[in-house]
Length: 75
Image (tube, rainbow, N blue to C red):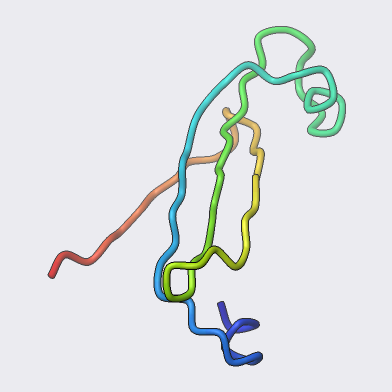
């Protein structure tokens, strides 16, 4: 988010969708996964400034190598 601050864009919200699915052939090769039974975590993340999406990313992780932990303040 610091890069947006540097250009005068204030990020005020982001959304993340996390799903798990079987890895496709390309992911198996690129992530050095076993050819059978491999799963990945997919994180679809979008940053917003004043309700407008300003950056979106799809991130794919090997499912057996990562843990996702979220801490969200409650007001």
